[in-house]
Length: 73
Image (tube, rainbow, N blue to C red; front, side, top):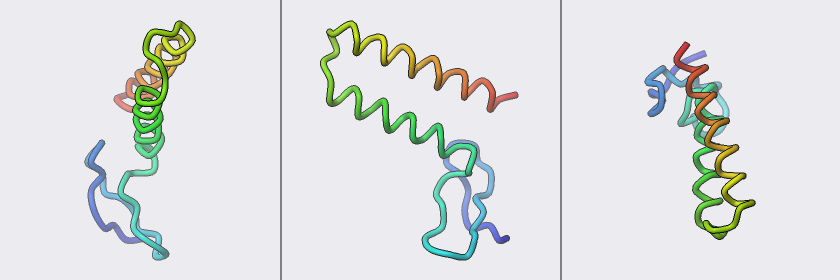
Protein backbone atom coordinates (compact mmCIF):
# COMPACT_ATOMS: atom_id res chain seq x y z
CA UNK A 1 0.00 0.00 0.00
CA UNK A 2 1.40 3.39 -0.95
CA UNK A 3 0.46 6.83 0.33
CA UNK A 4 -0.39 9.74 -1.94
CA UNK A 5 -1.36 12.80 0.10
CA UNK A 6 -2.41 14.05 3.53
CA UNK A 7 -5.96 14.16 4.87
CA UNK A 8 -7.12 17.79 5.32
CA UNK A 9 -8.99 16.87 8.54
CA UNK A 10 -6.48 14.83 10.57
CA UNK A 11 -3.21 15.28 8.66
CA UNK A 12 -2.51 11.54 8.35
CA UNK A 13 -1.31 10.07 5.08
CA UNK A 14 -4.13 8.77 2.86
CA UNK A 15 -3.58 5.25 1.49
CA UNK A 16 -3.69 4.74 -2.28
CA UNK A 17 -5.10 1.33 -3.10
CA UNK A 18 -3.97 1.32 -6.73
CA UNK A 19 -7.34 1.63 -8.43
CA UNK A 20 -9.28 4.67 -9.50
CA UNK A 21 -8.81 8.15 -8.17
CA UNK A 22 -6.85 8.48 -4.89
CA UNK A 23 -8.94 9.19 -1.80
CA UNK A 24 -8.95 12.74 -0.48
CA UNK A 25 -9.80 11.88 3.14
CA UNK A 26 -8.40 9.34 5.57
CA UNK A 27 -10.88 6.43 5.89
CA UNK A 28 -11.78 7.41 9.48
CA UNK A 29 -12.37 11.05 8.50
CA UNK A 30 -14.61 10.23 5.55
CA UNK A 31 -17.65 9.78 7.83
CA UNK A 32 -17.05 13.19 9.41
CA UNK A 33 -16.84 14.81 5.98
CA UNK A 34 -20.08 13.10 4.91
CA UNK A 35 -21.86 14.43 8.02
CA UNK A 36 -20.68 17.98 7.36
CA UNK A 37 -21.95 17.68 3.80
CA UNK A 38 -25.29 16.28 5.01
CA UNK A 39 -25.66 19.14 7.53
CA UNK A 40 -24.90 21.71 4.85
CA UNK A 41 -27.59 20.22 2.59
CA UNK A 42 -30.06 20.17 5.48
CA UNK A 43 -29.41 23.83 6.25
CA UNK A 44 -29.89 24.82 2.62
CA UNK A 45 -32.99 22.72 1.87
CA UNK A 46 -35.19 22.99 4.93
CA UNK A 47 -36.89 25.67 6.94
CA UNK A 48 -34.83 26.79 9.93
CA UNK A 49 -37.92 27.72 11.97
CA UNK A 50 -39.61 24.30 12.08
CA UNK A 51 -39.26 22.30 15.28
CA UNK A 52 -38.66 19.07 13.35
CA UNK A 53 -35.77 20.73 11.54
CA UNK A 54 -34.27 21.93 14.81
CA UNK A 55 -34.51 18.42 16.30
CA UNK A 56 -32.77 16.90 13.25
CA UNK A 57 -30.00 19.48 13.41
CA UNK A 58 -29.51 19.07 17.14
CA UNK A 59 -29.31 15.29 16.75
CA UNK A 60 -26.79 15.48 13.91
CA UNK A 61 -24.63 18.07 15.67
CA UNK A 62 -24.45 15.91 18.81
CA UNK A 63 -23.60 12.85 16.70
CA UNK A 64 -20.86 14.80 14.94
CA UNK A 65 -19.51 16.17 18.23
CA UNK A 66 -19.36 12.65 19.65
CA UNK A 67 -17.49 11.44 16.56
CA UNK A 68 -14.97 14.26 16.88
CA UNK A 69 -14.51 13.54 20.61
CA UNK A 70 -13.94 9.85 19.90
CA UNK A 71 -11.38 10.77 17.22
CA UNK A 72 -9.35 12.86 19.69
CA UNK A 73 -8.96 9.98 22.14
